[in-house]
Image (tube, rainbow, N blue to C red; front, side, top):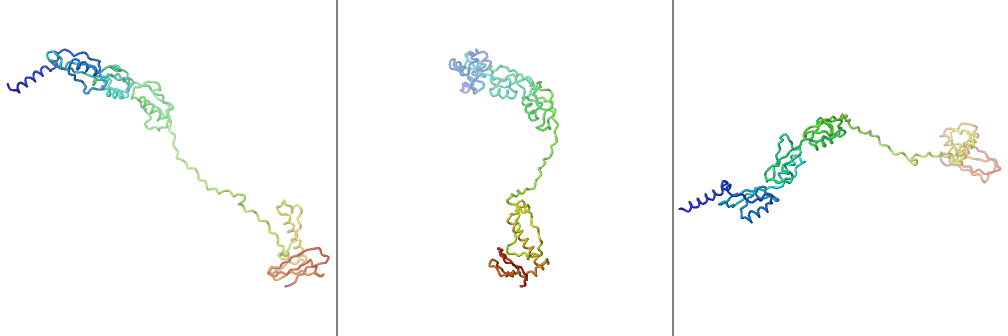
Amino acid sequence: MPVRLIVALAMAVAAFWATPAQAAKCPPPPNVIGQTYEQAYETLHNHFGYGVATVPDPVPPGSFVSSAETLSCIEFKITGVRVYLGGKVPDLTGMTLTAATAEAQKAGFGVTTGQPEATGEWKVAEQTPAPGGLLAYGQAVSLLLDGSTEVPYLIGRTVEEARQLAADRGLTLRGADDARDDQIVEDQNPPGGDELTIGDAIDVVLSVVSPVSPPVSPPVSPPVSPAASPDDSPSPSPPESPRPDESPAESPEAVPTAPPSGEETGSDLGVPPGLALVAVAAALLGLAGWKARGGRRAPDRDHDRRRAVRLVSRADPSPDVRIHESRGSRPAVRLHVVPDPGRQEIREGLS
């Protein structure tokens, strides 16, 4: 017989004995359900010498044996065992459907519900198997969902706060699409505390929006100059006192003035007493000159410039009387009055 024919017959016999039909006639494997994968491998492979195949492969950490079956045998002697692994089902109750699906897939399971109307915000009310139960990897956890939620109290809240509270319960607001965030909720239906199905809307009545007036710019006031301090204000200049070298005859017309009373020459008028005495003396001298001229009106100023005033005494000049002639354009008279028994007169003379 050719060698190739012998090899083909041997492979066909091996395949016949390894078929599921032949395996069904084999005895069941030892009971390792509920054991961890490490414990089951120790029993099947190290103790009995069976080959072990796992589903899934590779083995997730912390896996348990959910079921096992004979994979192959020869003359009713087991040669291989297939082990189906599983793990503990996580607790999904209270989670939304979206969160429960993600948690189950992370653990190696799927989810199934008999509620096609459910949305991702519905919450898990019950699950099978119960939390902590064993389930083969790849199988689905059956969930019973609850779509009811409590309506929050929204009256007195701003639209922004009401939207956030409703979204936390899986609800929306109806009647606030174009509302401002600072508007206030004055009424709602259904009222707070009732139940709605997740995904439903709460009807709200909002406060009236007040028109917004344009901002008014404050009036611009003109700059205010700083107030002048008392030191900066011009102080009134004191009246000029007549110079002692000026003659009373220089004024165009000497008008006799009555001597002021004692009350008017006092310090109440703001004039120093010394200055008042000087003014009175000047007035008296002017009056005397006017009488000496016989009451005639003084000539014009240009003529006065061509005149000079001389003091001539009929008696012998007293050594205490001094006469000065002016060399300038204006005459000047200086009188040094001392007690003198002689009599003096004033004459006018031409220069």
